[in-house]
Image (cartoon, rainbow, N blue to C red; front, side):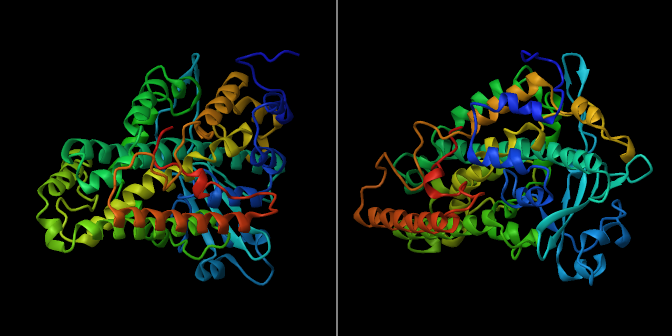
Length: 477
């Protein structure tokens, strides 16, 4: 039978019919194991949105999970209260999705949920989901789904969480928190720093192509008739409102990886390779920036008296991150350490953080049921009513699935003219000491590369998104 666009698939195996040419080892692994709870948990740590999970110290008032509900997911001699106190319970909360207007595609309404998902760091199974509620307001029509429910009901609940994950990772973690944040630094750098300024020279390779790709994204992806409007449940007004909500609570502190992991309470969560590799890269980026800044600013007074640099930071805070009283970045730079941290955050965001959200999107979204771009029926209100027919009527149709697969391949693939982190094709610096700093940076990146390759050797499910050779200097796609 020929593929008929606009029609539902008949069953889950049908999705394999678009999975024959565009593929990756991780996408194929995902296709085989996506129903397993441990892989759901793994994606919270090392998938394309690894910055959502946080430690749960106390259950939210609007998520009335009881100890009895989840006892069967825990080892025999413990309970929910003990595990909460031990720091082994974690939460995904998609409250930001609540009330976002949903898209209408070809005259048919699409649907959005704002789930809550409780996870447990199991001593044997790793991080696993143990309870899911598909709305922010508990009640008879918002049941709590559990692993012990009928398999299709539990699978449907996990798919709804992963659908919210698609929206949050594409619009917030990827678009807003990397592309649009770095655009602020691009504009301020071009406006305020002359090309001979050392900070311009330091940042220029990490801002390459970003304004251009952002313009193309506005025109082709998130515009009134763009790809998101055609296939994504938040397409249209939803994207704008979702991004505005996140922008209003955006903080400079949350862009600093060490603070981010600490604030989310996940500094000791095992098998969190995104955190482990991200912090290794943060340290070498910060060291590189500090060494470079030290060549040109001998004291805090040098920073304070650099009028071009002070105009740059005012442009960032007063023109870029405007109307954000809680953003937390001062409008003047007082010390070399403040300057180094800001520059490290900028370079980390434009390289490492972008790679973490961009590079794995085909791996985790190509098998459409794992991370659906839209849902065509509302969230289930009755656990017993979930059937395979319900699931197939809810998941993206044939045409939406094809576009999801194609666009995540296009955005996530290695770019033919990519310049890896630490490689500087344009010689902005010619000073001997500066070139030594760059050489040291490259050597440290090679050491990280060797460590990650060694760590992943022979693994069926490697984590290579933050392999330095896979990270671009700047956001170019």
